[in-house]
Amino acid sequence: MMPTDVYQDPEPVLEVRSLAKRFTLHERQRTIQAFEGLSFTAHTHHLAAMVGASGSGKSSALKCIYRTYVSDQGAILYRAHDGRTVDLTTADEQTVLDLRKGEIRFVSQFLKSLPRKTALQVVARPLVEQGIEYEQAMQHAREALERVNLPARLHELPPSTFSGGERQLVNLARALVVRPRLLLLDEPTASLDPRSTDRMVEIIRSLKQEPIAILAVFHNPQIVQSLADSTIEIAGGITWDHAAKAVSEQAALD
Image (cartoon, rainbow, N blue to C red; front, side, top):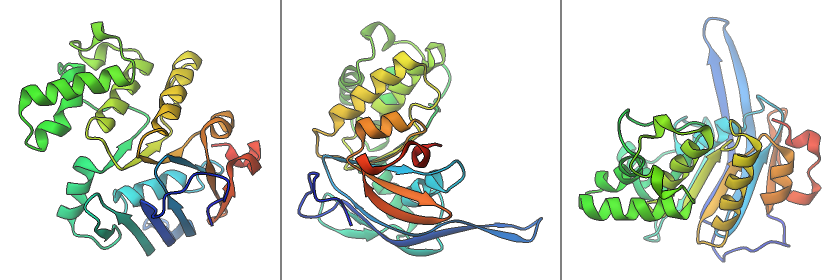
């Protein structure tokens, strides 16, 4: 159950039921249980953090929700903008791709972008792919970069010339430009220096004021304590739901 001392919408954006994922190592003739029994809900204006030891399955769980991985058991019920409820474990590929283009966005540790493309072009690309007119897409991209406080002098430069922190701001802006309903963050601060980390944390904190449900993996227990409204602990392949303040630093280690 979700803790009762945090904001909850009447209807969750995401409901995960008894999710499980296994990996088969064919060369070793072994099957590894990444996680099982994963059940939780995600609401707008709320950040839920997945915590657990390194290799416990946190990132794998995020990738199952994004459908990079296909889960072996359970349901992932996503409530879309138009009122539909989509089970992401069984939805067809086109439905998943359409949701990724707009409503469900994923931010990883590292920005992947084409060389020589400017930050504006990188951020505008998801809108252009939706068929939005180029100039309008560029304007929305500029607004998204301003939203994450990337200096204007960098907007027309390629992210390949940026610091790690600046590249990650572009990464986040690219996810936010389509105004997602569900935001998945896979260790977005893991490769950042302390100053860039503090900057990213404050930006993520501000996102909780918007109608976005955030599900995140952080390697730093202090960030979990600072940002999370609730936590989902994965240990030994089994999951538990907690209020954020009850999580020990050991449980939050990546």
